[in-house]
Length: 346
Image 1: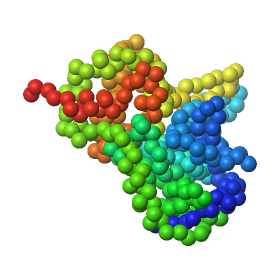
Image 2: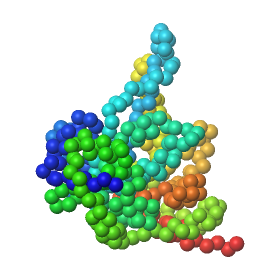
Image 3: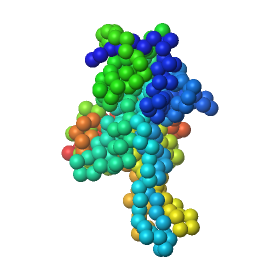
């Protein structure tokens, strides 16, 4: 693939040029944490981070998204008809996304973009976005991406991979969208992308933790569902939902209507399988009415149901956010080990 060298003296000029063609998002630091935000004029991405506190999934899949508007005024010809809300059609680019978070979009895509169903909101946003990755040269202590289907220099899902050096970035265009992005920025100084391979090996050697998933497929769902360790796993959980909100591959949502006078909005909001109301039926029945059932659902979905359904690995990219931010120290690596090594008497 084509390599491009971006001199840091030309970095700012290129970023500002990109803002004329893209809604450009990048990591910025606020209140002590790095997160992705729209880079307004004069604002540069801040790459002085290991990983952002939240993944950039909200750029593609907003925490709250208005889908339709309608009127209940029967004096109007179009009353009680849902009308799609016009969105911003300007292309987007996410600059500085970690490879694990780009790979996460591919896992989520299997749910939102299928031969039977296409979620036009998610698909339109995803297809209209260029993902410019920042290789991870100093992984966090809780990262286990190399055993979760990607890696600190993983290219899956990316359009461009950036590797930061002292006085320059080395860019590798992976797709035509990536080439167009670099051209818009005016970054075209050809460079050998060969050194990326050596840096990749060095970064992968810094990943200190792993998950074993090799035996998950051979377990049956009833075996793992009825395993005796779920009460222990769930014991300390407070069902706060932090793990689901920080996870780049979680997609639970709820649809709600808000009506003011005779005008209404229908919107989609993030939800969480950790919350009792998420599965509360209109009949009054709740199939996950206990903490243990909800915790089991989260891990069974990520490590067993998804794997069985798609035969393409677990629903996790090993970013480690849920481990770092869980207030009671529940660790998905340990739960994965319990599930992978579980033996039953047959």
